[in-house]
Amino acid sequence: MVSLTAKLGGTASQITVGKIGHGLMNMTWKEVPTPDEECFEAIKAGVDSLPEGARMLLNSGEFYGPNYGTANLELLSRFYEKYPDYADKTFLSVKGGIRPDKSGLKGSLEALRASVDNINNTLRGKKKLDLFEMARVDKNMPIEEAVKNMAILVKEGLFDHIGMSECKAETLRRGNSVHPITAVEIEVSPWSYEDETKKVIATAQELNITVAAYSPVGRGFLTGQIKSLDDVPQGDPRRHLARFQPENFQHNLALLHDWMAYAEQKQRVLENLASVNVNLSEQDMADIGKIITSHEIKGGRYRDGDEEIQNLWG
Image (tube, rainbow, N blue to C red; front, top):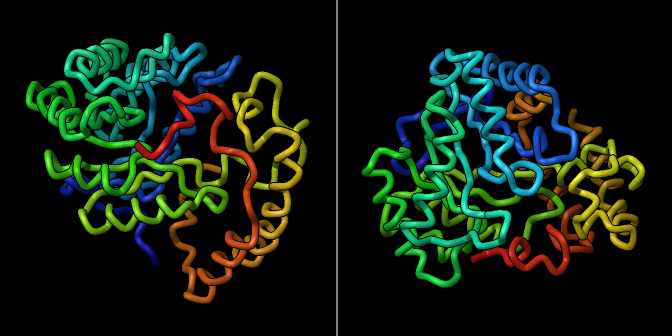
């Protein structure tokens, strides 16, 4: 049986986490947040499924709330207040830097300190910030300088480990040369498997950096539960994404059709955790690759024209 756990990379190489983490964005980044108890039970279920000594990686964001607010961190603060024993059973990764006025993405020591202080203040001391990462690369300064500034905050004890997000393979290598990078967060799925994605994964493997792959089921599209735009609730952020626009959505259904047909030959929170026990042969990987390359996905990963978010691969 395949192990449910793995060691993290970089300075966290002694920490064991579940191979399947828990992204929390969709709990709060919507008009009507999911009720606390529903969120709490989902988090607890994931943690409780892991063997003793392993921690569940929780992925949050300073801006995962309406108007780029701190609703997600506030949710976590309430969770840890109610269930303090789960603080040591989880590894908390938080992205920061995107501000409501779009003045974020700054790698200066002042801007990073403000972001980390905001995160820690919102957590109210209920949980130590394990890993911090800039949500995007500040393209107005060398990545070496930004990582050096984050390393200063690590030395000050404001958080323990450094991550990177949405960066090129070359940028990841340069950042890691200044301070060991624990994890790199990128979107990986059958409808998001660009050449640069493959390069980042290969570089991370070479440098012992964990790849935190988000949106593995295409923001819900590849689950088969979204067969038309009517299945996406009003007010859901996905309605603004380019790939969910009518002219692109119908085209992209072709990938979903082939993907679901293949998935049915092989096999929610506990179901996703069990997926690490699915062994894929070389032929399986070849078949999956054929499905991916035979479909051109239409639409960017975010909103067309939203340069602050869409300008990826820094």
